[in-house]
Image 1 (spheres, helix red, strand yellow):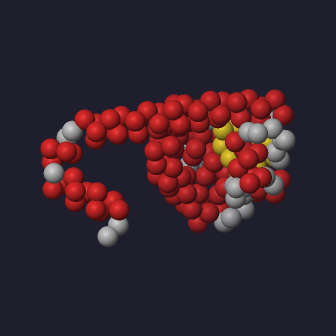
Image 2 (cartoon, rainbow, N blue to C red):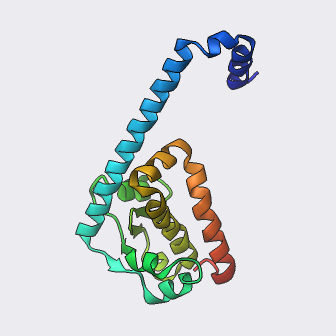
Length: 173
């Protein structure tokens, strides 16, 4: 029997324990940990964004902007900058590209691409990352971080959905 199922059955069988102070303390500790992780992620996002900006950024390529106007408002697209390549700093984008499988990372309003070709041609990848910029705008920095810590798959699902839709129209590049 899976551990979660066994725990759920135990809690259902003993509702008084489920309402007890241990359960409340455990939930409070979990919430505290999630909030601390979200705050740390938010701080890392700001530092990583600032490092990308300091290393040099460019406005979105005009042909990419034009292709994405059907999907995103112009003011959002105009707020996005990008760069190609990573620095030696321990930024989210550098670590995600160097040690993860990321080919692009959005840090608030700057997108860092691993490869020049993607930055110049991959409209679907741009759409995915611009969706994250839109999420930052919609939820705020801390709201984004809280959602990402609690359920990164849901956050990424929105970005994958728009990326897939744009890919269906424009292809992968």
